[in-house]
Image 1 (cartoon, rainbow, N blue to C red):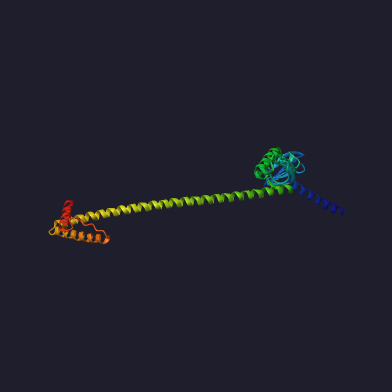
Image 2 (cartoon, rainbow, N blue to C red):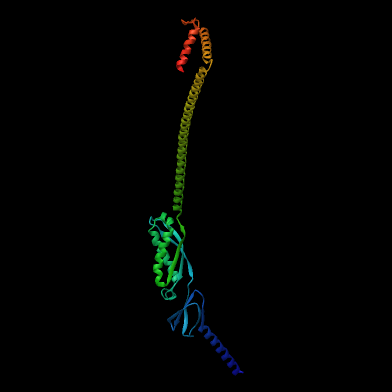
Length: 308
């Protein structure tokens, strides 16, 4: 019975030893990971993703490094700006292991070291920057921190990808001063906008008045041109009609009986106008040849001949 129990115990012990040996011999490295292998306490090699066989009890996995991008929260720190204003700054750091050997043996804890270095670098950069530019040039500050960190972390096998300032906390007195400054700036901009609006309104009114005067003068000019053209056309028409009438009168005189008709018409007009003259006033001036109306008519006829 005792022999059976000893045999069973030995069998179980052997099975356990075989399992441990298999576990220590076969290793599967996940994707985007590196296993750092030491042989008898000395660095041997770095295993990439996949299946690997180790020498049991001689080779061991000393470090497991991930090659994925890591996010580290940089704790709030007090920084003093160039103009002696104390601010509290929170940040977020993005890093990635690019050399598992250096990350394992170059430094004890690269995450803690990167966080502390980010804080000290941020204090240095903020100390060279005025408070106003701390808000305006946040991107430039982030780039400066990344440049300094990446240079310092190169021996650790670490690549610093980005650094972002997540929050800037100001003292209460500075917040009140900034609010007053922003309020004054908004009022100044409102006053400028109002004055610009009034100025533009005056310009628009004066421009409208100027355009109105120009339009009125143009209208008056066009009116005078139209009236002049109308008068010229009227004179031309009257002259044309008069010449046409005279031509027709001359033609009528040369026809048979034309002269007698003219003499009769002149005599009638003479008598009519003389009668109107007599009605116009109390004083009457008589021509010397009043008794000889026929002679007057003959004289007018002679004038018409010369006019022809």
